[in-house]
Image (tube, rainbow, N blue to C red; front, side, top):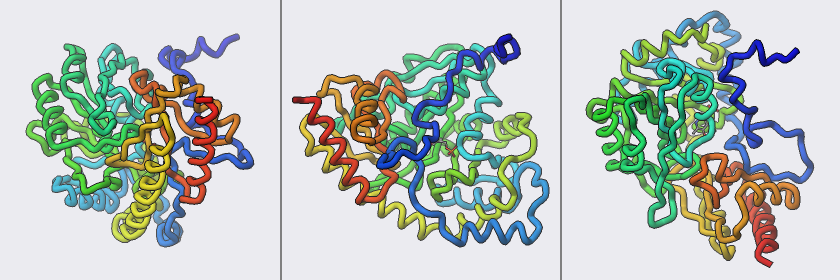
Length: 388
Ligand SMILES: Cc1ncc(COP(=O)(O)O)c(C=O)c1O
C-alpha cells in the first residue's frame, strides 16, 4: 500500500528539502559554507534571559504572541521610520520560514500566481507549491558590477490577472543587492497599479554594506495594505536554532494572516522574553558580527577575483558571495559536487536559486577568516584543475 493515497496532492509534487538544507553528519575536515547559519556564539545574556524567564514562570500560553515581545518589535521599526502598532500589526512566528508559510497560507489559493525573482532564496518555492499556487519567475538583471538586481520591467512583463503576490528579499539572498530607492518605488507603483501584494523578506536588513540605505516597502504610497514584511532573528542575532521571527503588515492584512489556523504562537514564551532582551541589549553583538562579516567579505572577494575565470562582485548586503564561474564552462551543480568530493568544501550551485543563476555559486561567509583562507585555497586549487 502506498502512503501516497493519503497525501495532500500538492505534497506529492514537492521534493524533499534541498541538499544544502539537510544537516550532515560531521565529516572530518569539511568546510561548510552551504547554509547561511551564522557561526557566532549567542551572547550569554540572551541564554540567561531564557532561563530567567522560565524561573519567573513565563511558561504559559501566550496566545497571539507575548505583548512585550510584540511591543519591542514595533519599537525596533522606529529605526526605519515605520510606525507599527504592536497589537494589530505584529504576528510572532517561529522564524522566517514559518512567517513565509503563514503569509502564503493567508493569501494563496490554488491557481493563483506568485512572482518569485530569479535568482531568489529557494525557501519560497515549496510553500507556494504546497498551496497550489503557480510560481512565475521574473529574471533579475546584472548591474555594471555584476550584481543581480530586481528589474521592474521584467516583473511587469510577467504580471497577469491572476497575480496575487510578488516576493522580494531586501537585502537579497543570494544576489547580495540592496534595493535602491528607485527600485523600491518602481515595485510599489507596479503593485498599486496591478493590485498585488508584496511579500517583503527583510531578514538581512541589519547587514548592509558600503553606506547603502535600506528603503522600506511598507511606507510607500498605497503599500501599507499591500505589504507583508517577513523577518526573523535567525541572522540578526545569529539565532537560527532558537526560532523567533515575525510578520509586520497593515492591520487588515495582519488580521487576515492571524486567521491562519496555526494554533498557538509557536515561539516558546521564554524565548520571546529573551527576544525582548536581544532587541534592547544585543546591538553591540550585532556590531561585532558586522565587523567580522565585512572583514570576511573584503578578504574573500579579493581572493576570488585573483582567481582567473572568477568574477566576484562585492555584495551590498547580507553575507553571501555569488561569484560568476561561467568561464569554467562547467554546470554550477557539477562544480559544487566536485568541490565537495575532492576538496571537502560545501557551497551551493546557483541553480538552487533559479535557472537564471546558472554559472554562479553561493558561498555563505559563516566561518572565521582562518577557515575562509583554507576554503579559498581549496576553491582555487579545484578550479585550477578545471582549466588544465
Ligand atoms: C532570505 C531568507 N528568508 C528566510 C529564511 C528563513 O529564516 P529562518 O531561519 O528564520 O526560518 C532564510 C534563511 O536562510 C533566508 O535566507
